[in-house]
Length: 200
Figure 1 (cartoon, helix red, strand yellow):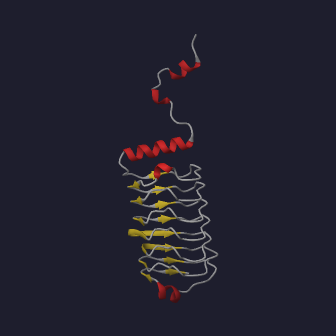
Figure 2 (cartoon, rainbow, N blue to C red):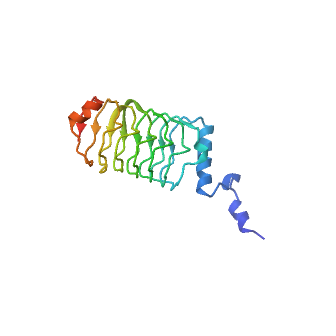
Figure 3 (spheres, rainbow, N blue to C red):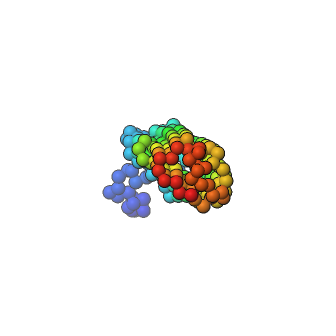
């Protein structure tokens, strides 16, 4: 008698049995990434993750890291170093704790529920990059990077009322429009060395 299992397995390699749970598939993908030398990009976007997989802890990412469009409430346990851009947009983050300390490319954390920038990288970019934190609920810039080699964008934060914590240096443009307090160019230039245009 022919069994359904025999039909399904006929001509199929043994690897037909792959982990079925999303968490298992993600861990398998990360394990393969690490085995291949951590050189390329790692894309975990749109996987409905509520937390970053534990296997990512202390991993260095050679390229870009994307964990956007999930349901993350924390970046804890994430990679310690990212050689390219880091995107955690469109999540439910209230804090950036757990983000790498240095990002070589863009750092994108817009469209979250951030009330503080504490935990943000202290340096962003090697060339011309972007620190973008639009559409959140931050009230001050405490925790922002000390230096941004590129643009600094905290526009569209309707509760931002203080420049406390502003970066010491932004080599590109500075965006702070649609905030609770309408800051002016003189206020910003008094506390930050801005190399480009200020949009307020």
